[in-house]
Every structure is written in structure tokens, then in C-alpha cells.
Length: 287
Ligand code: C5P
Image 1: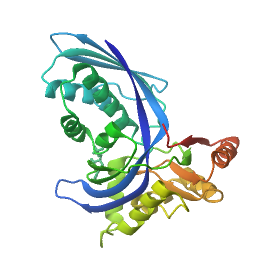
Image 2: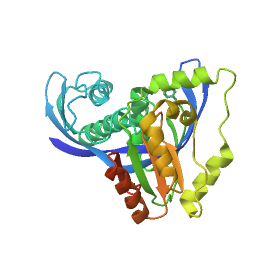
Image 3: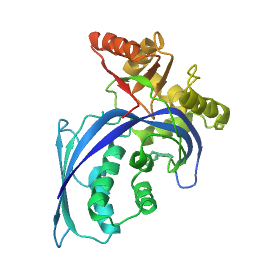
């Protein structure tokens, strides 16, 4: 049986990194938003006495395709947890930039879980979310998508209902950022103390998303620590600041995005960046 899934990228409209926990993870308060940029997956399941998972990547052949790839790990974890054996062939059209702060790998893993559970129906939503959390901090959100405030490691999800579509420009510098390295850099830079999340700023942001009005200030703890180490992303950030209502780096970088008042304004800004040789797209948060 073959199923097709889309794996949507996310941006963080707010990301406050709190203290490092005894388990090595950091307490997060983040507002995640799905954007209309996606990988495409074709997942073929064949009944078999032994489990065998293979991944073929189209359009980005640099990606690892063995057990280090989160999509493969997701399939293996699902089958093991469900006590099933199966041959799984995954074909992945990779469009979300890798190591760019948009949860591309997590989105693929979530899409594999959706595909397998759609066919096998071995788990209810809660069990699938628990399994997703074992694969990575962003995987539970990617399973649900939309707009949500996520806390804990990222796995405690409160959906934001009725969030209005935003006009976004994603500007992708191509400078890869390792997430564990970014957390380490942040820890070193603020050895003297950790800021607590600004809940008021988060409330203002949720109100803006639900009711409209002026875009409030956006915040990402990683921006101050990581953006200065990324020359192209820094340039893209400065360029977007000239025309966007708000600009922020997503996740641990390196993608930066701008929020624009209209689709036309977003297209104009993206076209101007593309004309100067940068990779940028105007995109909606509506999927
Ligand atoms: O959960 P995930 O495997 O995606 O996380 C990748 C790395 O990012 C972790 O190994 C950890 O170093 C860091 N991380 C963290 N706190 C979080 C999420 C991720 O320190 N809440």
C-alpha cells in the first residue's frame, strides 16, 4: 500500500530558551507556526516477516539515508513500538533546507509516523505523540502542525486557535547551524544567568495572531547569540528589516523571516532578495 504525505516546515515566532535541565535539554517557551513550504513523501508498505526500511532522497542527495536519518528512525520506532514487521520504502522530495531552523527533519519524521499510522492504525493520537517526542523535541508539533505554544522540551503543545494567515518572507542563507552547538553557544554566553520567558510578549503575540492589529516585537533567544556568527543571515536580516513589519531568525538558525502586511509586499521583498542572488520565498502560514 502506498500513501503520500506532505511534511510542512515551521518557523518560531517566539522562542525563549530557559535553563538547561539535568537531562541536558533546555526548558523552552516557543510559539511555532507551520508555513506552506513542504517536503513530499511517498511511503510504500509491504507486509513482511522482517522489518526493512529504506529511504531514497530526491532533489537533495547530500542527506544521509541510513538509520541516522530521522525519517528512517521514525519508521523503525513506529514498527517496533507497534510490534509490527513490515517493509517500508520512503521516497522523499526534499525542499525544506537542512539545518536551517525550520524543523525539516522533524517534519519528515512526523510525516512518516502519520503515513504508517494511517495504514496500520496501531496507535491513538496520544500514543503517537509520545512516540514522536522520543524522536525529537519538534516532532510532536510537526505531527499536529498549525499554530501552537510549545513548552517543556517542546513536546507540551497548546494549539492557538483561530490564528490568522500571515504573509511571510523566508530568507535562507544556506549557512548550516547545528542545533546542539547553538544550545552550547547560548549556554556559554549566558553562564551568568538565564532570562525567563516574557509571558506578556507571548500573550501580545497570540492576541495579534488571533485578532490582527500591529505586529508586536518578536523574540528568539538564539538571535543574539547565533545570528552574528552567520554573515549572510545577518545581511538578510538587515535587508528584511528595511521593509518588513517584524523580522526574526527561526529556531537556532540560519533562516530569517519577515512578517509583511500584504502578500504583494512580501512578494516584492522576496523578489528583491532573489534579484540580488539570495534564496528567498514569499509564503503564507495558511496551508
Ligand atoms: O530533541 P532534538 O533531538 O531535536 O534536539 C537536538 C538537540 O538540541 C539536543 O540534543 C539538545 O542538545 C538540544 N535541545 C535542547 N533543549 C531542547 C531541545 C533541543 O537542549 N528543548
